[in-house]
Image (cartoon, rainbow, N blue to C red; front, side, top):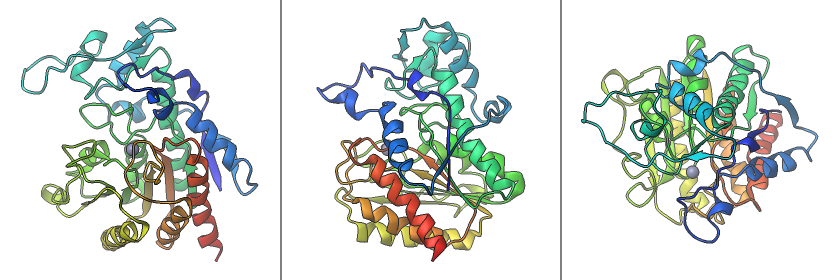
Length: 340
Ligand SMILES: [Zn+2]
């Protein structure tokens, strides 16, 4: 299986100054996450590492109105600066949405935990390029299943605002790239609801979006991820949320997955994109489910049975002791099911 990686994501390594607690830095989005995954996958000769292609900015600009804001702000910073939006005017104020005013980031961003550094734009663009490279391999028919080692994650970045450690929505960008070739299903398996991805396509009937996640009554992103969000207008029925309680076991998880697979089969997509987060592992510091490493192979086997060209994009997963094993189990689930 092909693994796509981009160039040096370690250039985006914030100190997360608003995350409190002694272990905050350790459990957040550190470049060590990518290293842990890569170290594990490269021990297995069935995986080939390739570098992402560079795609034109227009693959991002049409989807992300804050593209220029992130690029301009990054360019304005000194090497060691980290900019955290800290004033959020809210909708309805009728304010201009400026892309050339770094301090007005609160109009483009949902929170104070998604800082911009000098290299953040380059690294986030590289993460989207990683997903686009995978999409191109599927579109050309060269590969049937591809893994894109994206960092930063993308699924909380939406069509209005970015946030939640996410700058550009990698899976939405890949879906948009594939759309001229056919219908796309996006399945989000991160512990947190993929609110950005859902918002991109909530009115789009050619893209099916689904997510299994911690119940937003008690988990981020709180405002979205409920079961009654099913799509709008012509797209009614093309969004499927499965909010699950804390402590969810593999058996409960697989029941939810089977319900989504039924909807997904009815939608009959030509491509599947998986937003693969592993903060569903029982030992994840910010997740609340009870999945174990071997469970990811079982989940993958059911998805592989759909026999769809599939792009798997990395999202969350913050326990560095198990993250590499979780990703390896998930991907080998595809390899072994395909072979059987
Ligand atoms: Zn997550």
